[in-house]
Amino acid sequence: MRTQLNQFGSAGFEVVGISGADKTVGFNSIFVVLKRSQPTQMPPPDTAPGWKPDPFQRFAFRWWSGLNWEESVMKAGSSEIIHDWPMA
Image (cartoon, rainbow, N blue to C red; front, side, top):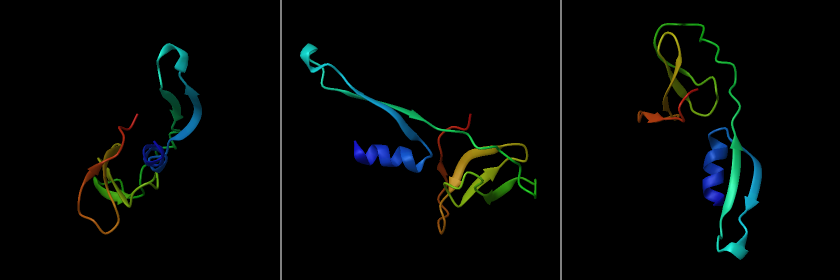
């Protein structure tokens, strides 16, 4: 569970609540409530579509469509395209 929470933390989430289920009724579960604030999505100075420095500072680069920041991202020193959590 620690590894999973660390992964969510790396994606900008924070734990706001934890609750354990009542073991007397046969459940052995933990419920975690997470939240993720959305920073202001300012356009880059160069508004042409392309790879730009990630304004959310979670990855090295994020794809700018010309209108919006997309969920396609790249880590520093990598050419592999990965997908961040859906942008809301």
